[in-house]
Image (tube, rainbow, N blue to C red):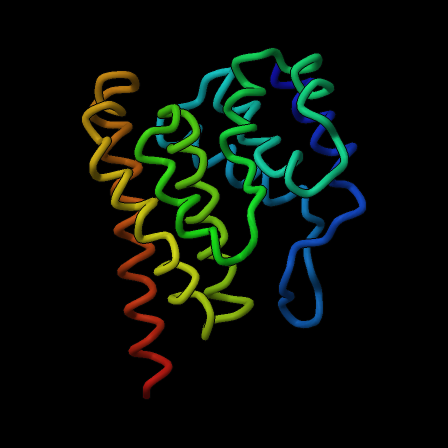
Length: 184
């Protein structure tokens, strides 16, 4: 399943580049799903479903691939997680979308936290003035993480849940340091 997910992500994200650049160079978009998958795996939440859904978390939102095509490649369980991660509203509805992770599958919550953390880390380098604002837009997501920590502990273990929370806190501290450095 994971190899099929990787192949599909590479196929559909191949023409895209990441937003932002460093020294005038942007990365191929496909790097982002790999980074999200690696975070999920490094936290201890790496299963076929979470890693496959991590690789494909943006594919329905950013490409013309359909849910049914996705389901046919990675199966219903992982495809449902990708569907939960797919944002289909306008900019103004994004706050409401973040609130949905209080009741989403625990897999979708974990992947969305990894996605947001990876994006913030990238913005800290490519758009440092925007990084804190982007982080703050996900307050409801991070509140959901803390609210549902016991569910993560139950499914993946205490260490995994703490690893995820620690990653969130680490980014929060890094943003404060970045802000202090930019003041001086």
